[in-house]
Picture (cartoon, rainbow, N blue to C red):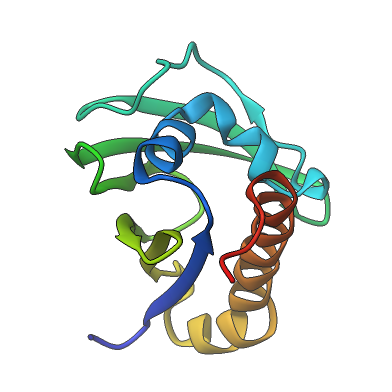
Length: 156
């Protein structure tokens, strides 16, 4: 990918049916449950109970030094029970494209996240990503994994 673009992959497996996983993750009202409390996520608009193409999610987070950041994402693609994509329309990144993939596996379901992002820091993007952004993103996904293992369990 072009210079200053970054990619994060995260995969989790749960001992639940695909429909149950889809119902949980495609409900934007569950976002707060899987977001680390230190980010102080506040949703600022009325949320639908189910992801759909064109849905907007407006929220505020405090990712760095307690400074509030407004973020708007749009659900740009939905394939029921298979995947959905959110893209930043306004927020801290120069570019943000987040794919959420779901597939049945033996003993449950696998959820795979693929995020492509670009920081607005030009030549300093690599330093910022190395020392702050990628660490924080990995922390967010680590927290999410902890919460979801408690909620759904692990595939054996």
